[in-house]
Length: 141
Ligand code: FES
Image 1 (tube, rainbow, N blue to C red):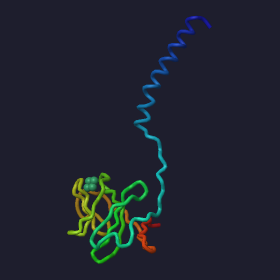
Image 2: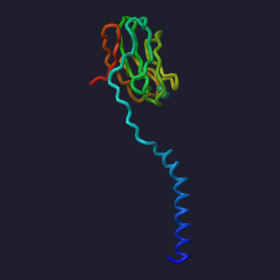
Image 3: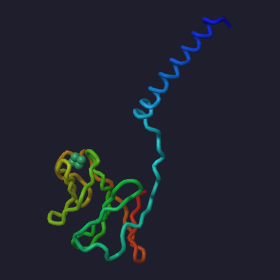
Image 4: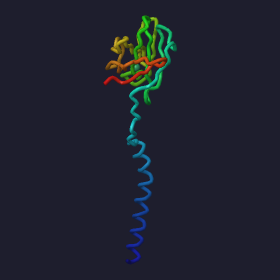
């Protein structure tokens, strides 16, 4: 190996290492690693008696918020609280007995269907089971 070949190789390698050190973080930022979302199929959302009639509670279902509603006539309903428009968290409004998304005034009925606003799809509904003192919410099969 002569001196010129060595210097060309050395500077070429240095240039590649420098480019890689700049590009690697940019590529990692643009393409985040695929994270296996923790699959949670059933969660204890509340205790019996926690929710007064015509009220609701937001709870974590896996990594996403969900909403448990105790209707005026005592029926327990659960939905994903992630708005299908731009993923804001919906809340329950007892006066209208609807779920409301404050981001763009999206509104859903107690079946999860869109009543008004820009959401393109219904909220995912979950199954509710009462076992002893606990209210369990699970994904529908
Ligand atoms: S994010 Fe819910 S209406 Fe836009």
